[in-house]
Image: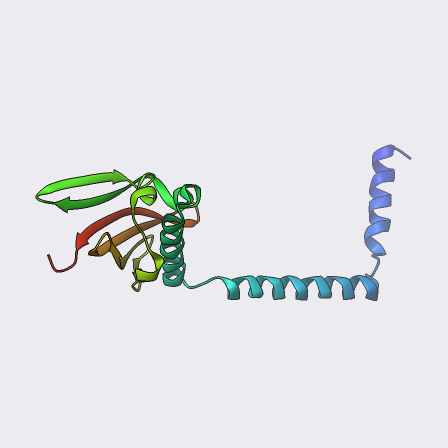
Length: 160
């Protein structure tokens, strides 16, 4: 008998007598599938809705600024993020990587509004007190690489 004929014959023998999985294998597969389904649904239940996720990033950013935690603040911003403000008809631009150190954020005065979101862009209004001024800041965020990042803050003085 040649080798090809022997292989064909052996293959036929294996195919004609398939082994049935034992009840232990079936139980294990069922258990694993159930656990995987439970873990997936638990993880998705823990993820906040997109608007809440945006508001959480803004809150974490302001908390980092208040604490002077530059590393955390930078991790929550885009590398090109800026603060824009107009004072006495002069436009000021400050990289957000520098802003937390001189922002004067006092978390006791910070009020974070509801996020307005459209796809991968969002805006949140923040009101706070700093150096005797009532500030209103429009914080814009973008979502990329799976995370929301602060892109810009446009700052104005309330009532002016």
